[in-house]
Each structure stands twice: as C-alpha cells, then as structure tokens.
Image (cartoon, rainbow, N blue to C red; front, side, top):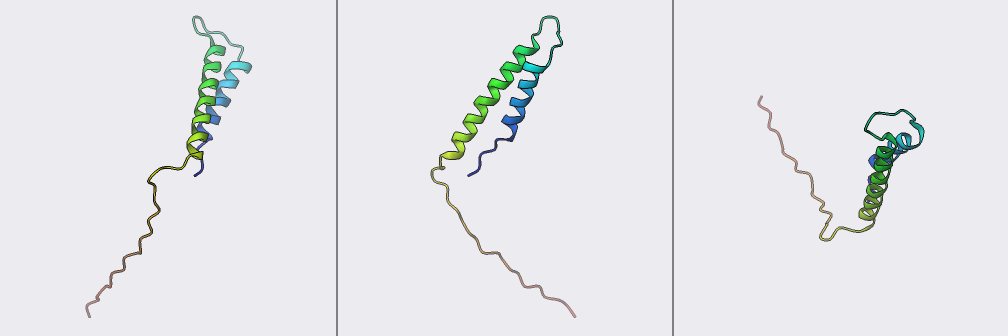
Length: 76
C-alpha cells in the first residue's frame, strides 16, 4: 500500500516558507511561530502516513468478481 505523502509535504513546505523566509510582521501574530507549528504538524502527519502505509490492514481481502454480461434482443 502506498502512503499519501503529498499533503503533508505541502504543509511542511508552506510552514518552512513562513518560518524561515517571511520577515513581515503582523501586530499580535507571530508569522514565524505559525510557520513552525505548520511545519511540525506536517512532520507528524507524514510520520503517521508512512506508518499507516507500512502496516497491513487486518481482514482486508482482494475480491475478484467476474463481469456480468447481458444479451440484448433486438426487434426486427
């Protein structure tokens, strides 16, 4: 099973940009702290996704079903 790592990587990238590259200031809000929080959240999310992708699901079965064919009758 493949882990879905795209969204955590995007969150980590956005968090790093806010944390390290943005120098703008907003009164009462630390943009760098928000970036650090977003980055940490992305790291935790990525670890959870990778761990879930490694462990097999219990009771998961592959079921193969044959396609159903129906004959059509045409009126003449």
